[in-house]
Amino acid sequence: MTESSANKLLNGDACHRTANGSKASKNGFVKNHCLFQQPHKYRRPREKNQNVTHNSSLYKKPFLESFEETPLLVAVLTYMGYGILTIFGYLRDFLRHWNIEKCHVAREREEQKDFVPLYQDFENFYTRNLYMRIRDNWNRPICSVPGAKMDLVERVSRDYNWTFEHTGKVVKDVINMGSYNYLGFAENTGTCADAAIEATQAYGVGVGSSRCEMGNLDIHEEMEQLVARFLGVESSMTFGMGFATNSMNIPALTGKGCLILSDELNHASLVLGARLSGSTIRVFKHNNMQSLEKLLRDAIVHGQPRTHRPWKKILIVVEGIYSMEGSIVRLPEVIALKKRYKAYLYLDEAHSIGALGPNGRGVVDYFGLDPKDVDIMMGTFTKSFGAAGGYIGGKKELIDYLRRHSHSALYATSMSPPVAQQIITSMKIIMGEDGTTLGADRLRQLSENTTYFRRKLREMGFIIYGNDDSPVVPMMLYMPAKIGAFGREMLKRNIGTVVVGFPATPIIESRARFCVSAAHTREMLHTALEAISDVGDLLQLKYSRREQPLPSLGWMSEESLLQN
Image (cartoon, rainbow, N blue to C red; front, side, top):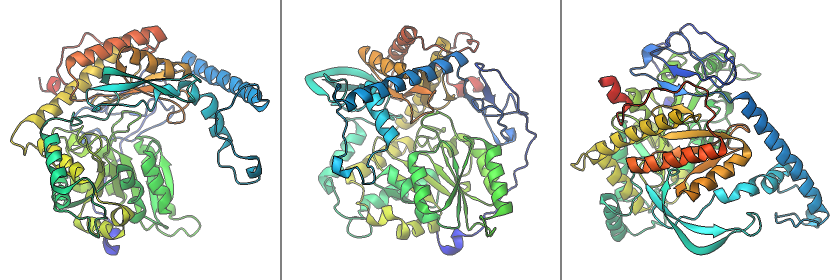
């Protein structure tokens, strides 16, 4: 982005605000969002007294999301569980201080006590006394392709999860419900794998230089042209690491005197990039358009603090699919607000690209919007494409600017050639340029799997978060003891899952996060659902108070039902 273009105001249609309303609700009741069924009112259900501006005319299809409130008794018991763990943690720390109990955690030397502490006190306390109890649920070594099924290296701990030993055995054919393998391209056979092998033989594995020196290969140029065509933008550039795509490029786009408006649930890479930029950061409530509009209006009216000069730039930063909530950004409303207040929009499609939309082109395709309305389109190749790295797409002048100013472009080693070839091959399959319908079939299969899996979990009585079309499916566990118990019990039934707790989530909203894949067969999903139901009964996880729907109509997707 050149100096002139960086500060150029964007023209667009105005967004006319609709009437808002808030409706109080008692704890424990579910709230569903459907902009077609409830065009007059909307608010984020989990957060009380929060109004959200919306305009149902901006949506071309129903927008369905569900966030059932935490039952009051469950919330109280969860706080009590953390309280008991904290009390016993301090007791064990007392015993460790007097060498009654052995402490395995790293400690600073006595002569370093007057230095700036290397470890935060509470962070250390949490690691010693809470995280270590359930540490066996993470970092499990995998010894196969992380596809629909995978093999795990068996390990045991003889000191309460401080250290692990491998037994030499392998747990075979574990159904993988945790990897971001949305379209099933994480595979070691087939067209993509063969093309990657050929690229390795032609180019080798490493490049040994940055793109601006001796690391710019023809395969990189081909990949970037293909990505731009796939996204429907003028130009694009790629990076070897998805995290660095955000953290190293946002500082190149904004700086002192600029304002970043960030969703409160944005990924850590977006948060880090915003902080590194030196810009002023203001956070709006998750997917809450009224909160965003208020910040935009205040920014225009009051300008910068103290001086009240106009902001050099205002950048709205959102994600396509939020990986812990399973929610989809209200992009039509965000674009309308962006146009009205002449701001810029940075869209992170790490989880949505390839996983949403009739053509797999992300949340822009999902809502049927014009890619030109998004100023900076960012995404990663680590999920739907089964590869690594990230991209930024937009106007040619934006990409030319980033090639000269982005730290990730100037100093990072070029993307590995076989990885680039994996991206090219998988993207052509999605676009149908391989001469087959394999891409369309995988997109349809993912949509059907997502609809089926979410519907069955709700029918079983679990509390499920997120949008009905999101392949990221958070299932609420709440209590700290159930985090570890759920992961272990599922592995006993040969199901690999991801469990998440504080500080990655609010303290009373621990959850299991399932990622649905096109590679999952109906038999696999049925097996996983049976295991989830069994463990749910064992651990009493079926908290939902919503009325259970009538028996489903089989494997039809939501879109198919609407068409019928």
